[in-house]
Image (cartoon, rainbow, N blue to C red):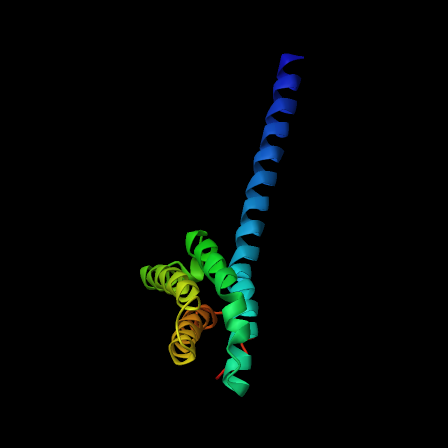
Length: 146
């Protein structure tokens, strides 16, 4: 009876360990196929940059500056997917965090030329991060030249 109980307990523990391991591998695989914080930042950057690029309308960038700074901070503090987990990407994210915070301050008193130049620099830095992701193996990248 004890032997049978031991086998049952061993089987139960074995199944539990295998289930947890398989789940962890699946979660990691999904995380490596997506970078939701990049996509979230991209949406706000696009809403800010395209009106400026297309018609020199800086108002959306000014309105979105605080949100961009908050998203950049959140993104820079998050765990990175393995294919972009490098010192260079970490440094670029820290720079994005610092520069978006400075941008959020600049929109309160800077002139449109300064704001536009800073927005272009933020956009270029964002694309450097996005390129690191797509060159890291993400296959369905669209050409996104601005």
